[in-house]
Length: 210
Image (tube, rainbow, N blue to C red; front, side):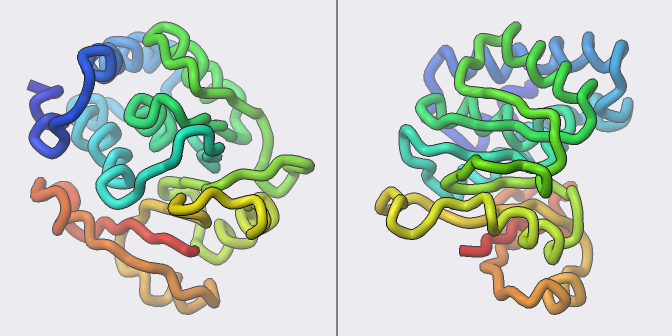
């Protein structure tokens, strides 16, 4: 049933990808009992609230093979882990300031055979000598801060792959007018409820700063 929710919107998965998506719930359920990274209510709606929400990025963006994506403030691994399954030839670097959350990320990735993920215990503003093609993030901080942290970590123009969505892609909720104004940037904005029809996605948005 849970996988049916994913297949409602995506139809081209391989059997290996479906097996990985299917395995996520049991892994998170087991680890959540040791290290709480997902609320009990959210575990009851795991595929809707976490997996499908993360995959909205894949409905609008095609990450090119060989590119490097950073998940800023990945928490328990979202949106990075679902996107790593979706894009198996793209490298995802999951970063968080709380090390125990990264323990969950590493163990879930290992148990489900996700090999295109690495992790880093750090705050984004402390990262040096690393550059990424795109940075993704979900409900971590105000847009102004996200862009301030992300901009120095993005690759320079001359090193870009043609057709790849460069910049910052973030998932947010609520009234964003003030937050966007204070950020000083003009992102592209998608209403997720117009992409996924589930009521959960009302007042949830995806933003892209090129």
